[in-house]
Image: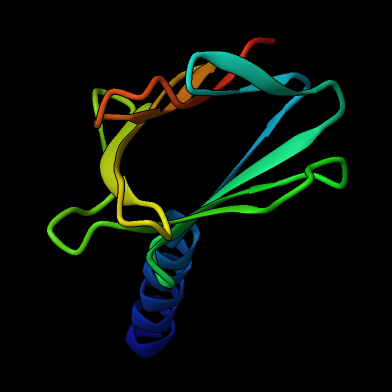
Length: 125
């Protein structure tokens, strides 16, 4: 009996860990602003996937002209915090090596270029 209970706890906690490693956000509207100009407005469902196992954040949509995949900065980790772990924050690097800040809080998600050229990706429900 004790073995079954312990096995159940191990299975529960391993499931919780895997689900915490990959998180998917789905939005109806996402705007992509580059150099302070709106370059793309995605009106359909857009999936933003945070994958701590691959250390990436990706924006997936069939209407995108190019894919947006960011590497989680080696010195950072996308951690959840807050009372209900409703906030996620970390630093990302683009393919070009530019530094971005990824923040998620309830219904607001933003990926902001810290270098200051005005590039940002955000949901606008």
